[in-house]
Image (cartoon, rainbow, N blue to C red; front, side):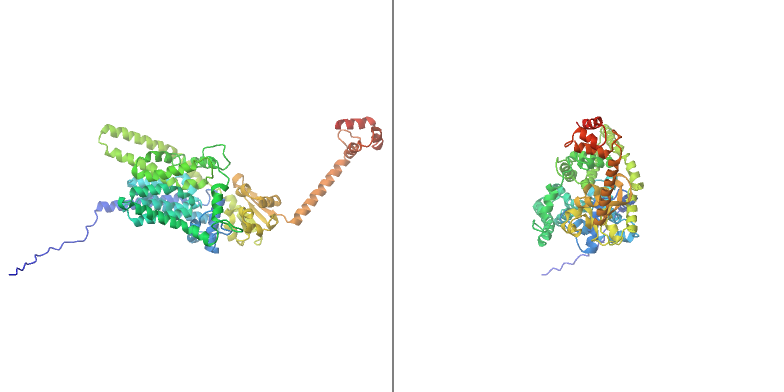
Length: 593
């Protein structure tokens, strides 16, 4: 017998997910609003007086001229690319040169165009800093505080505005930490972190010091059974990214030294040991413009909040697991900076500052959460008072920031350069060869000079192709736009050109002084030398014909004649020849004895 079971009625349920609770949606909207407002503050703080402060620097012009070269010449540099830095940084800048071109009217400095691009990178870095703060467990308020403590720090305003490769590398570095610490523990995220870190290193090689911190973060966050695969995936992508740079050099036959070409090997030898050291960070007797001067400059702008406070907080943060990777990154970077020898670039601090802010505010977040969990009223009171003292200690140096804000938002440190450029545009012929620092390079090219006729002073002596272009000596140079950077770092050919030039225009004092000079031709130099020789001859003749101050009855010429003739003539003979008394002759000869 077959039994047929009737299918019971199935009650259909609504599978549409319930809408989010209004409170949660409101919280997300408010968070987005607060972060947007925070980014608006950051954008305004970094954009105000962007053309006036800080003073345009030669390195800024170097990096932006290379980005211009990529966009306009299809080359990595206007000169011979010698592997001093990997090119990913200015390759990225080249992608965004259209943005400032659309904003500016063409009357501003090209370095300003690069600074506009830097503002964009700062905004991206600020957002990633906030997300990384959330990723390591900070509450929204503390995460926003960390973002702002970094972004509106006067030291960050100073360094972040300038066209530095470090600013380009920074969002890639923070992005690598974000992906390494991903809550999903996905292998793809860890491999993407390797790609981000590879791009960061290829943008600025000094970010390589953060590799141990990234590996610690990866080890902590990866799912234990697949941890080896995560490390392998991250490492493989990082190595492959770096290998692209070496492969590029290999294809160009520029990996190793050889005749008549540059090489990665030579560039590494120069960067690691060939360049002049900058001294120890804490040695006041170190070289001028060296590590100590950089450090004191950092402190002057930062008041020690992140440069000192961030490092000190990192020592304590080693005990907090979620902050440990960031703290390790800060401490390793600090140890590298404290090495007693070697070269420390002034912008080295750029990559360290956001992590210092995250660690410092992260510790406050840890202390606040512990305080909120404390059940004992006395413990809460004492801990709350201690936290307030810490906040007050942090707030005291912040009061000094207002002076730096005044300079950042009102000072015009580039007015002399603008006047020098205006004079050069109005008075120098476009077919002339002009040697200058790179802060003027793009502007002169934009003003109508051929890119091959505007020469960076450094390359005249260091790049064989440029040296050959000027004929191997100063006579191939027509004009100089002379700045403090050129005065400190110019090579022999450029110095000789300066010594054989005449001043056309000058303004400013100290580091702000700029001169426009015309280099004299060989014919002019020969005429000047002949005129100087003739003037010297006439001056000597006048002197010889003039009466002697000590023996007025004789001329200076007669006095010199007596001194010459004494070897072959007696006193009586000298007196007879020069028609003077023997006593006078004796007195003259006595002055020689």
